[in-house]
Length: 172
Picture 1 (cartoon, helix red, strand yellow):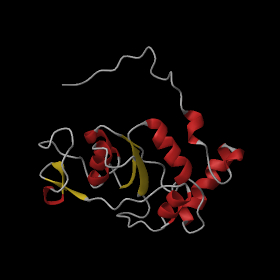
Picture 2 (cartoon, one colour):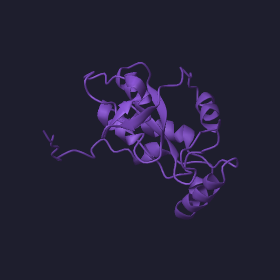
Picture 3 (cartoon, helix red, strand yellow):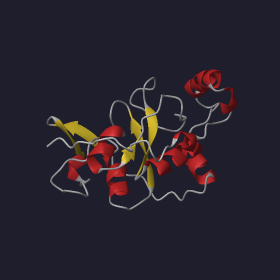
Picture 4 (cartoon, one colour):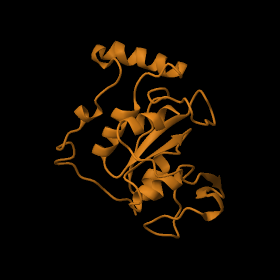
C-alpha cells in the first residue's frame, strides 16, 4: 500500500507485520494472549495494534504503524509506554489498509519518542490520489497553511521546552 511505499522511499526497512488484538472481558487483550506487555507480562497491551506497541516498547524495532478506529493506536501506546498518534482520517492515506470503518479509520505512527513520531509523520502524511478522503483532508490543510502542498514538516512543531516548569502526576 501507500504507507509501505512511503516508508521504503524514506529509507525504512520493513521488518514484519505484528499481531492484532481484540476487546475481550472488559479490557483489551491480544488474540489468544500472543502479545505480552514488555513491562509486565501480566498486564494487557491495549488493543488491536498491541503487537506493534509491544514490539516498539521491547526495542524490537524503532517505529511501527498501527490502525485506529477508536483507540487502537493510542491504547497500545499508552499501555506499553511509547508514543502513538491517531491523525485526522485522511491525513495519512488509507489506500492499502483494511479498515474496520472506512469513514473513521486511520493509520497512525507509533514510536519510542515524539521526535521519531514527527519524522515518521513527515514520511507518511501527504495527499494521495488513491484515497478520496486524503485529497479532501489535504485541501483543508492547504487552506490553513498554503505552504503545505505535498506535506507538512511535523518536526517544526517540536519544542524541547514544552514541559519545562510543568508538573506531571502519576495516578496510582
